[in-house]
Length: 450
Image 1 (cartoon, rainbow, N blue to C red):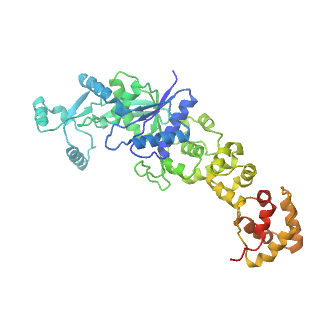
Image 2 (spheres, one colour):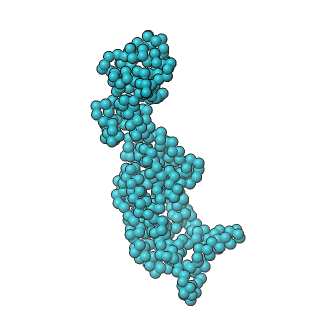
Image 3 (cartoon, helix red, strand yellow):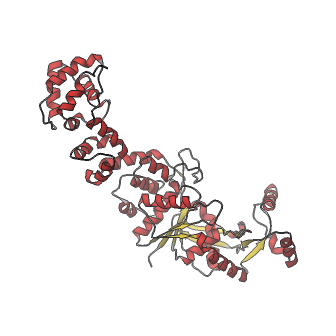
């Protein structure tokens, strides 16, 4: 059967580069293996989930080029979770517990003070029917815990290899809160069964959840999917990434003009044995993927890699791919293609091309220092006749050197400043045909007096 992968974010903030990494791996492995990629919103937390964040996540994935094959929302499946909970109650696999958050915290502190692991003591199992009734008469409502087997759960992880966890060292997990809110551990398993998910690739911070969920799959009579837990990436300062802060969000990269392919490559390959490098597209990226290539170590993410790779990809793109984007910046007409050929190596973001277009096609006058006035007048005298081509610059500078005796920086820098107003930029050999003879003469002339 074709594999089914899923990405299940909570719409409680903007997804960051770490979230994008998980989404990309799942989407691209599904593409590589002829499978399905599901976007599933873990939106049962009614207080924190926001429709605008769900919309932003969809927009971010579309920008990366990994639009899902289908979208699911856990908030639309509450009745299904209640149905499955009822079946677990009937089978005796869950039990009601009445402790408040404050009472549970006091228990944990006492256990830690005694040097004991802070594992739930299953006190709720000892409650009689009359004791439960008395608690409910006080206004307490139960939360529902899944009773773990206490056995060793083993699985073959596609990243970490042979894994095992002693469930006796874990607290019986809460599946449903007292207010009826379904928790991730429970909803995720029900969804994975109902949606036919075959492969779960997620961060290694979910490893302990896996043992619990494997027991839940068994309790519901389903075989577990194949699990893979990749290493995590941290911000450059070592801090954990969070949707709540908005730091390193995909939206921030999009707003600064990063190339989506660069973001995809860096997010996907960071923390693997594959070096970050330019690739032809997402299909080429997908071909590289194999869960065995993940490192086991925490990896730091450097945003500069996206900036650098964005520039490298931009420099390599042909004009035909960019004509529409350039036109949207007002860069069009017969000069557009030679303009891009001249300046593409001098911009790191496409938006920067607009500034060079204004420099090279506008009527600015940049002037020069008083010490170069006579030199620029000589340059105007030596300027070849139109039309200009790639041979105009060497012919002009050779004649000017013979006239003035200047060479090297003393020859070239006053010309660059007069013609472009910048100390650095595209080769003047390519710039002259864009400027044309009349504009060059205008810029070599002394600035008009006010």
